[in-house]
Length: 166
Image (cartoon, rainbow, N blue to C red; front, top):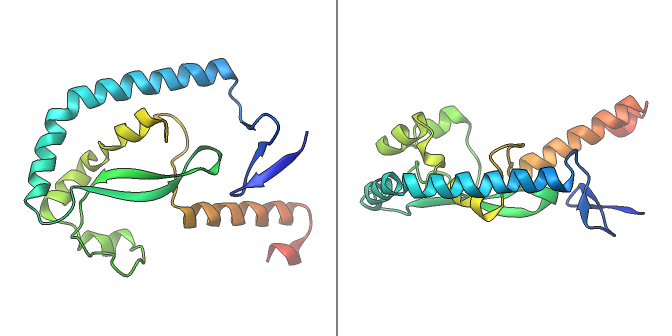
């Protein structure tokens, strides 16, 4: 059985199975939980989400903000959130620190973020299977690469290969 690294995440090529601590029945229970509760959440919260969408519609710009994240088995997907910043706040493509981002927030966006309501569209990501209610946070590709590089450097340091780790 040969292991391959794809997007820096290891899985078994023959079985196309990711190595983790959950067996198939546990994964089935987790996925069933995700589908049921994300569907109920979308159903119950859709009137509130519609109100948020209408408010954002009058705020000149898209209602939904999407960003690429890295999911299970290193698979990239788009995560959805309500837009909380002005349209061209990060037009240069450089992510801002939280303090810098705060001055780019719209007044309604500040309210959404304060109460974590900007993340309600992620229920759709959970329903689609891109992410789960329980598990690690899906990170941006650059941050996921940084984590992988740090882990490799730590493994090299533990093995005594300090020159390679630096």
